[in-house]
Image (cartoon, rainbow, N blue to C red):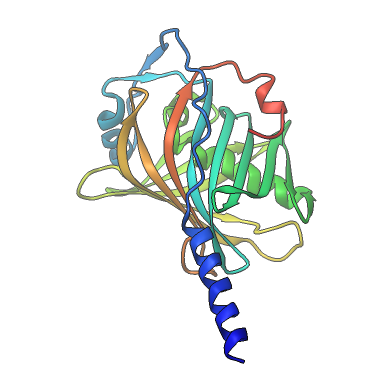
Length: 266
């Protein structure tokens, strides 16, 4: 019995150690070597929105057409928090590809390929593939929520509009095929920076009601000449705590992703 208990303790210790080792970062994606095009910051924006963009860009907003976002993360899967690394590729406002590797002792454990192409979402997981209308609805919300790493899109895309709520809150309206989706966006009363995006999203393809989906941005920093949140926390309201924490390490803009966004893997 003592030997069995010792073996169990050793296995638990090995498991604990394996989940504490971070994966190596993905290699940097080649940067864009050309300059950025800009447009003037529009007039008539809601008060907290204008304050936010003035802090990010001043009076001119860059036009961003593509982005490759790279970093490391922790993901809670079936109650276990796993270290991970990720690379998200965007044709901004149009399509994306997510590649995520969870790891154990820094080695790949589970590979996740997700994409949203042509208005259709597809989640390719080790235990199956999810597709359908409810996946499409959630994927479109992800497309626009991840623009927190290139928020100029919410100004430069003519299909997007901001509506006033109060001094610290605004409504972000984005396209979804022939329809629209909404985010309630909350800004810090102290810093003016975006703190939280709230929307109603389907959790999976299995049916049921939409659930409040929360995206929190924090630790704003400068990367590639742009001010971006270094940490993004994603929470389902019914779970109460973030199931994913994404820590940004690199982002490049206006690079050629035409073929890369169709691929799989890193």
